Image (cartoon, rainbow, N blue to C red; front, side):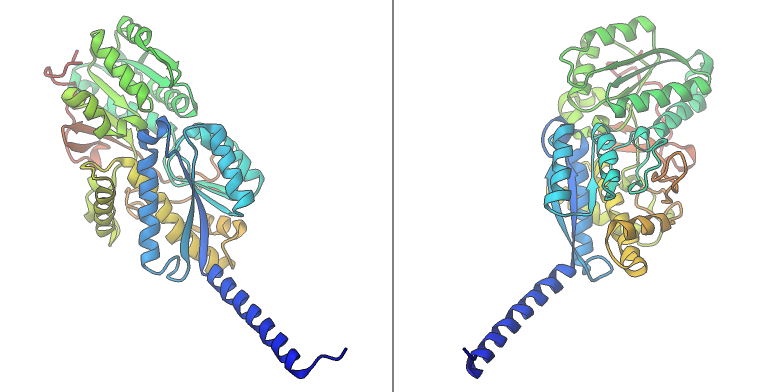
Length: 436
């Protein structure tokens, strides 16, 4: 039966409308970059810094979107996931983001215990994993990863900072030669703690320090009193502790109850960077403890950073305080913000403009092009990734931690000496309940 002219026009108009609708939808989707964002929003890691990292990440995304998006054109649409402080949940959520949400880029990851299996899985699928927070060197070492990148520091650098501080100050501050200084290394037994402790041991021995105890424990351990007893028997002058949040609280409480005394305690980020939570429990007892971590951006002298970063840091701090009501802005906020900011401003625009898109191959190539000099990020360090074929392929070769010291509401950078904002208090003052 022949089609009437009226019916033909109606069909053509309907088809045109559908095409127009599809084109509009495609255009809208083309102007949006969907990125997976995964952190521990529940469970013990949440309070250990993961939530703070996630807030820093969201602030970076918000600021980019307020300026029109990536390269001023492409709005960022984060697809969030909660890894629940469980490795299997992290793996399941990333599989959902990749296979169901069809995402090519995953940003975040707080725990090294999650980062190790996630890096292997995402590398195998040739998607991009952009690690903001997890520090274990084992994520990258000798893996020749090509789709996994981390501008964050790695755990071996904690050992360098720990031993560097002690060898520099032992004689001048304690009147003890480094070879006579006794150190105890305690750590949760996941990749984060094991990596930090291994680096502490290697660099301590290299510096001539006495390692009198090295002991791991489960972060979920219900009792650490036996560990406290071992430290007392070893006669340690200094303790390095790599732990999360509940385990740190348990250790410090039992150390106080059992009369453990020392000249200094060094945290290794994670729970020791959540000072507001530790102060709620211990008050002034934790004053003058040291902590090794990437620096909270607000502690740096912005005059020594690239132009505009001082204002960026101020905005980040204001927004974090507004979102949380906190008076302290922990290092983890800077970590989540800084690494995400680099991805959105230094990598993805290049991926699109130079390599033609936001697909994994374009992002991988753009990441390897990144060349930010020292002073070029809000945390002070530069960014240049080790290339494929090197032992730490995908790791930032320019990342650096600092040693910080807290006293009440005030936190200072005390090492490296060339950028310190205060001379360290070392040993703990006699007023400290833990003082030797």
